[in-house]
Amino acid sequence: MKGITMLSLAMLLVAACAADCKTQPSDVLVSANVMAYGAKADSKTDDTAAFQKAIDTTSKKGGIVSVPSGTYLIAGSLNIPAGVTLQGVWQAPHNTALGKGSVIFATGNAGKEDGPALIVMNENTCVKGLTVFYPDQNIDNVKPYPWTIQGKGTNCSVIDVTLANPYKGIDFGSNWNELHYIKNVYGCPLKVGVLVDQCSDIGRMEDVHFNPNAWTRSGFANAPTGPKFDKLQKYLNENLEGFIFARTDWEYVSNCFVIFPKIGFHFIAREKGPGNVLVTQSGSDVCNTAVQVDETQAHAGVEFTNCQFMSKIVVGPKNRGPIKFANCGFWPIDSTDNQAVIEGIGTVTFTATHFSGWGRKDAEAPCILVKSGSVIVNGCEFRDYGKKQIELSSDTLSAAIFGSQFWGGQKITNNAPSSASVQIGLNIELK
Image (cartoon, rainbow, N blue to C red; front, side, top):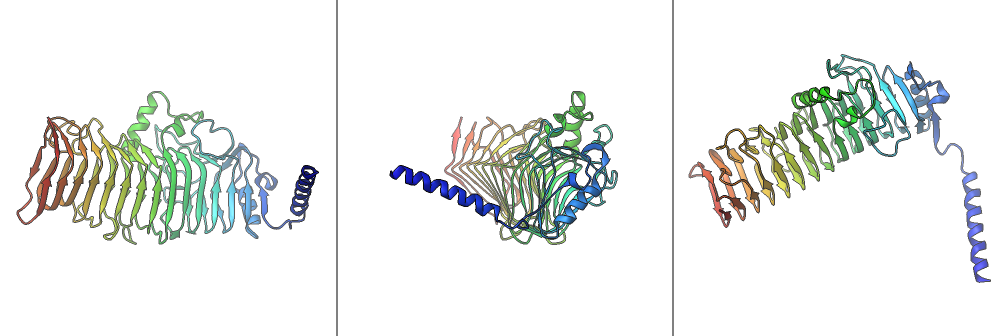
């Protein structure tokens, strides 16, 4: 009897819930389907006007503009007003089967790098579940294009998006923005992956992966496969900056990766000054420079935790802020000599970090070269036998090198002036 009562109660609750759902007002969420506004999804007809009409209709009360599976040619630009989400069918990023799902073929403003972005987002908007592909891009003759996605204002979100082969990917920096959110984005940008600037409140970036596979595995006619892959890699090594950070207070970055860039993570100052950024479980692979710090905020700077770098880091002469690497790893490419070159007056700290493979062209090149500023090396491991590990120049302000392990014996060159505070001790030598 008790079981029957419980079953009856459950059925009554389900019925009540269903009835309640049916009585919800129809204007709680206004949605539009781009097909209902004239989109053809045939990859040939320009669907820009149909998309914009669906977006503008939805903007009156806010809601979701649905982009069903299909290939949509967008030869112009789209403007997303506040409260609107442009949403395709993908529930995760991907770098294969790009011809499936909700695909935008972008062709507008070819050759006009400073033209209007393909998608302009205003405050409280979201782009989700889409693939963007540039069918006229060709690695044999790379064309500049404007930004693919550009944010303005607060709470712009880009989620579950694949940017197959943009010239420039996501711009959350040319306009003031706060609380932006980038999650699950794959792609093969050619010049810039993400730019962050003018962010006066915390921005977040998670699971962003820049890899040529997003283009080479696309299955489209202009995919640079075979010998053209080498041309693509060379182009990226000479041109791509994966992640650029200027003014941001703060930026939380996790699980982000770029391979074959000219610069992986670049920290700069523009009109609004430099920023401070926390990066974890991220990496820059097979690159000329994994991390380049031109400037950071003097009171905060940049922190890398549990990150991996296949090349070197460079801290420039204008930097004043603290730079920290904890639980990180460094590996070389064929041209790697120094794995860290340090200038400026900020302090660069390496903790529980390992280094290997430096001095590839110049066997006398130290792993860490301190041209100026201060350095702390604590609990690190230098894994190459017989090579110079650290060199302190005559402009060194201070150095503390302790509790570290040196394979082949400790080889530290100390040219710091007598006025500098230098402490070296309690290290382990493996001979």
